[in-house]
Length: 366
Image 1: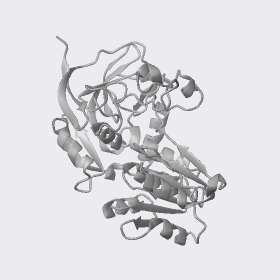
Image 2 (image 1 turned 90 degrees about the horizontal axis):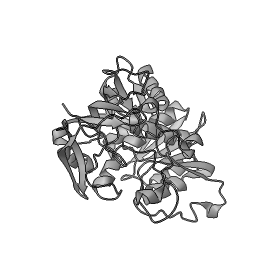
Image 3 (image 1 turned 45 degrees about the vertical axis):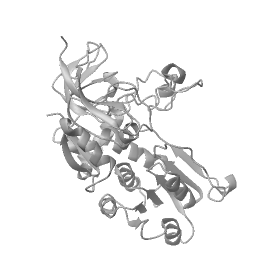
Image 4 (image 1 turned 180 degrees about the vertical axis):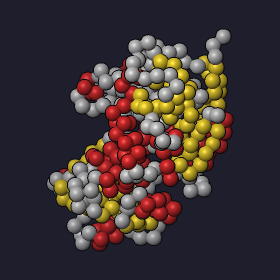
């Protein structure tokens, strides 16, 4: 009889349960990781609500921190017992998309997955944990293509310090990178959830001289200031678009980052852009977007709109942990709650309803 482990699985929209599953077998290119800490992502809430389709019975989660339990025979340069993380996005780097310089995209065929009736490639195909294969909200996770995706955790860094690296930090920083930020730029970041906060921190590291953070939660705006925001606007107290245009003398911002995934925030980000500015979109949208003619200057504004799926791979993870280790940013402050894996359903309820000023939840199997 195979050894078993506990795992949080998607059952149906509105329901995630803890079940027993066999501990995965390790193939030659894989690594079995014993999870020490994972977390819940906003994307997991989309899955819980049925807004993003995954197979019933799939283990959810895509942010692993853990210890190598067993290595595949072809994996070299690592050792069992080593502390590691793996990116939420773990492509095999053999696909056309990955070799074309887009490491987050694995290029898996859409029709083969039954996700639509069209031909083409799935634009989230590099995202495997909790999407196409069993994820990290479990006692163990199998990391595919481990040679390319495992990153050792530097000595002295805690699980909580590196917990944001696999997804939230990588995504938020990619949003700042995609915003074409130059030294001295003015940047607006709409929504200061975990990804928006990381985008704020990333904009500061890239050299923005004025960062305007927008949210409706006063606590999150306080955290945004701690991570580098110069101006914070609570949209419940003012018209954020009008105020940003006033602050910039009507010029608009050089870059706007949308980090929520709503029509309203996307449109606001577009309305505050200067001609020739860049809108960096990070939100996961659950319905069609509309681009207002006036905000888009009828298509004549030289605007740029960039989207992103967070980059993965061991080199991305190494760089992010270097930033943490250097002390240039501390994202451990974003871990506001701790839960045992056995209590993850309660943690989902807290996170989904955004109670108690929750930002990120550290989930520990033991």
